[in-house]
Image (tube, rainbow, N blue to C red; front, side, top):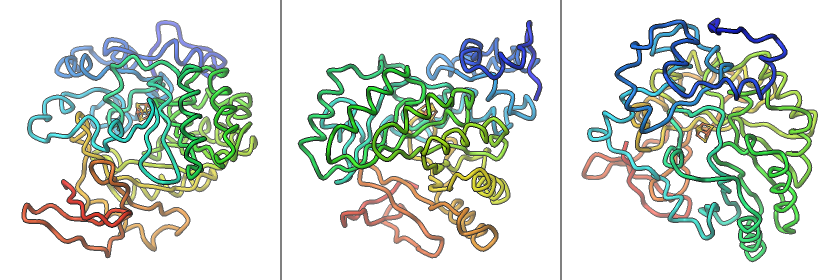
Length: 367
Ligand code: SF4
């Protein structure tokens, strides 16, 4: 939808990521002005924004089709009282995947033998309401220092079984370029590291940031993959197509990780459009995640059966290449489970499904 500005941006300004960030909305009064609606429309949600701050680029806001709270774009970026109100009823944990408990050195999460997650900080272009690391939003988590990199590289060198680093955050593509270059160089200098996988929402929420220079930095070290995070077909625009083209030209391979979100994409038609649209711009749909039980995001969870039903409907309806794996993470850092519609779980005495983790543990899952 068209946004309202006191001084409308020129085309050049709109396409400049600096302009987008300088004009990002950080409060409801700016959102109301941009959307052309009264500010009191959001009064019930104001206290939630104090607990979980609002941040959204004008570009991402403009992808909404209406100013209604049910709009799938606004639902992903505007705080609602459900984030705080329902915590007592629905529970959730700030760190349901026990990342911090599996952190051998600061910023590194080591849960699988051959790969680690590297948390580069909490810089993002948009605060996605369903964020897995919402717990970090209010922390002081600046970009990694040389001392952080020394400790991380020392750990990686001492564990030659680790071959892949998932560079996450926050959003690593929001780091200053010299910092990102340093990260790529330092990690690539560890002989046993074979692959760097960047996880980023930038191609979706701030595609203007993807410049040839940024892409060249990402591709300048060990074999580089980028996992994008598109959740809805309205997020696929000519700007995102341009950004992915730049990334491909630099030599990156692209996959997408979506999250199944109630009221955003929890129907087969929406996901069929998203997955086939991603393939058209050469991004392979890799995962469709069931929402983790993260505090402040519980209202987005659909229940596993809903995801299985959707996957069942998609099977055969769209190209097998467009079908991601439907997956979720077991609590306590026990690892991922890929779920097929025909794979029924057993249930424990409390009615919770019980799954077998990658290393043979029997783990109940709070559905
Ligand atoms: S960009 Fe990623 S880390 Fe940042 S708020 Fe969104 S999901 Fe969370």
